[in-house]
Image 1 (cartoon, rainbow, N blue to C red):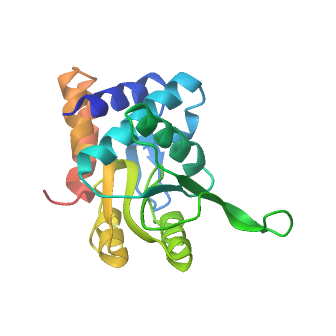
Image 2 (cartoon, rainbow, N blue to C red):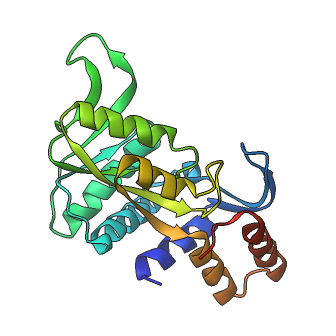
Length: 214
């Protein structure tokens, strides 16, 4: 496991991003864990998170010209990732969108750099993929080409189409999805840290029932 993955998982545990118990998802499934990146609310935590996103994107080897953050959770994430890349010597432009078009001032729904070239989208999670699909359409309409979507966690869970949400988005949109960690990597980390065995057993049982095959 990469250092950025370990740092991210420790951040998630320390800040309550990852919670364990019984959680009913939108799908109706009862998951033994819940992931909420929205609880990150301090400068230091956001700095660590941005560095993890930047490291994952760099490690992927994907060539990109700019970053884009879908409203709303993607906005602080894309800014933090751009700062982290600048810390490493790469200054890239970024943009984000509004939920509603602005009819005064500069107008429109896009804020920041003009979308051009190859774009890496920075977002929190991929469930139904609605926000990411909207971002992809928005960027293509603006003349740019989305090439990647960096997300925090891949649940590696089968969706209605019989494949994972990540695999479906990659297939439908023709881009690559880069997770900071997968649920299998999460399990390996928890077990390596001797986390509560009943918790890891519950996650493994859930994945055996609903997870994609390796």
